Length: 387
Ligand code: NAD
Ligand code: MG
Image 1 (tube, helix red, strand yellow):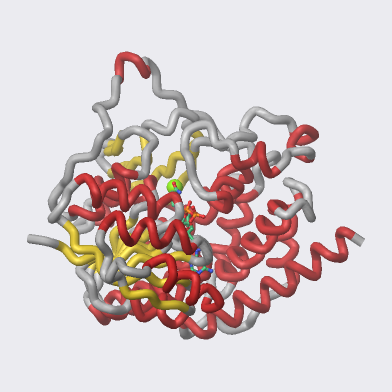
Image 2: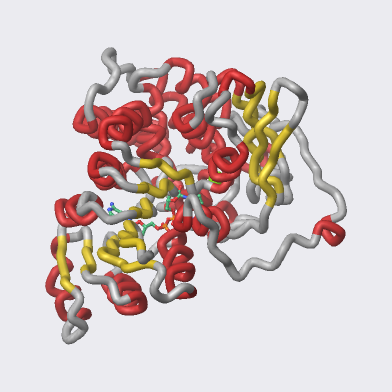
């Protein structure tokens, strides 16, 4: 049977990988809506390529340009953030959440509230508002399917019927493009260097997060939300090769892992077809050619991000939302050439020291106001530092 599908962030890396899978199996998916932030041409091309019913551009000032780009196609043009949220909450069988950042929170919440399968690539909403998203899912009966490769790996091998039999979850980390640099060399890392990931091709924000390893910090919090284990049971190990995507260690000594090529189409295909499977163009892993699998511990002196994220997770309440917001603005400042590479995590840590909202967020609106306040604190800290 055909599944109806909506793709949020269709012009991005996750969106394009999803579109590639959809195009390979004509008839399997009926695309309702595709959305993008500002890339009108990319959005129109995506909508036409899969025969979407509707295309939504988030930036309302681009409505006219979108109407023009879709002229004669029969695809319905819409514009504005409310239209993105409405498309997310329309009630398709599957919604792929491929927006980057906390900007995806309101659409993700709308999709989860409506029910159905929500494919979560967009990890920041789970970090900032994980408990609320889980509550919404419990109410609506929505199925949350993790597309982040590590969480997808764990999802595939986690015994949800017996979570108490899990001894540890082990998240693997590639180490990113700065893994071999000294602290002194890291000071001078440029946006171009930070975005040149050795194994994965991704959007700019997550590429910088991989370079600082804050990506693994966000993923630690993401794992604590998605899987019923306490945070102390979640460990991180460096695995430069990105072949083993994560592991679950059981009390009898069995460790179950998922292996695969470093291509997001494998976890995305798992989610799109769940509980079935679908083919991807990925050849089987050539284990003999890989030869050895290597693992090593993180050097927290050079990569403090996972420690900072763990502290925010343990502090709970609003701390993960503050961490995420500060990181988003710090990464944007780094990409804009306004702060150095090492200032990213320092800014996050200082923001967490300075700003403690005393109540845990009780709604998505609360999270968004904590997010806005934390951004302002982080921005002020960065200005002071620059002065
Ligand atoms: P990207 O920058 O390539 O794409 C982001 C998409 O979101 C684009 O379509 C853009 O138009 C849209 N967007 C950006 N800001 C928006 C806003 N304010 N409102 C509405 N739409 C907006 O990013 P990506 O690499 O595809 O990552 C998307 C998400 O998936 C991130 O949360 C990332 O952490 C996660 N993720 C990505 C990968 C990967 O391989 N790319 C792997 C795991 C997880
Ligand atoms: Mg990941």
